Amino acid sequence: MNTIKKALGWLCIATVLGLGVTVLAFPASITQLAGLAVAQTSTQWNSLKDMAQGDGQSNGVMLGSPCLWNGVTCDRQRGTIAGGADVAVKSISGGVTPASNFANPTNALTTFSLGGLFDGSTWDQWIGISNTNNTATTSQGAAYTTPLSTWFVTSTPAANTQATASKASGGGTVRHVATSITWCFATDTAAGAGPFNINLRDGATGAGTIMRTWIVDLPAVENSQCQDLSGLNMTGSAATAMTLEFAAAGGAATVETVSLTGYSTP
Image 1 (cartoon, rainbow, N blue to C red):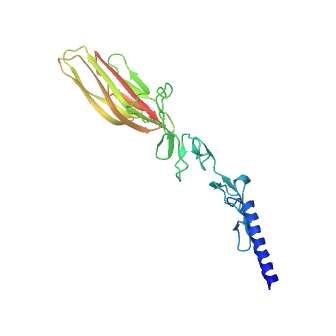
Image 2: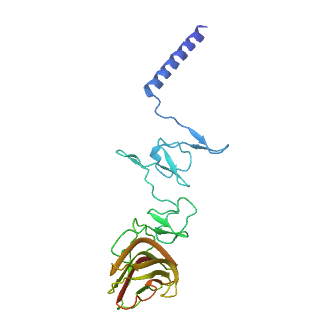
Image 3: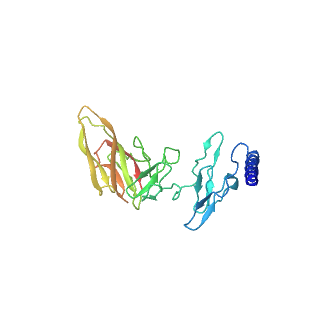
């Protein structure tokens, strides 16, 4: 009986000594956790990986930092100490280079990064004022706060001769737009003159459709008269000339002049 008691006593002493050695080997906290895994399937487990494994991890991932999936692997999200997370957009699917005559897009991503104007069929770049397009004979994709006169035609014939000024056809789909007119009439007689019609025609002299008519009538106390009219914005037909003219010559000792200004659209 005493032998059994002694054996149990030595066993207890050995157990206490063993626990003491364990405590000495791992004094403060758990420094390693082995065997932690994540289920990939119901029958397969993959060991978890820490940040030291780097990028390109495809399984068993439980990193200590957010990662972004690139379709094949999970990569650590980039950032800086000063700026924090790096969220710069490197590419946008469907981006295009801005250009005139850009087809109307069917999604929100395929859009201009610059200003554009829709002409009913395509998008055109918004053209500002420059030495080039301010003197061009056609204006495309332009938004002007005031009408700009990019061409002008005048007629100052001899006495008793009809004044007629025509802007030749631009061809194709080009349309002329009249923005202002100027006409003058003078006579040496003391009895006045008139009335005379001044016609803005959508076409050639004496033939085009009359778009607008003004009447000149000099009273006996006046020998001359000039008038300027602006802000007309009268648009003609495609591939058609535009003409401003007196309906006829004024007669002996009379002089007529006309000037037409405008711009053209493609």
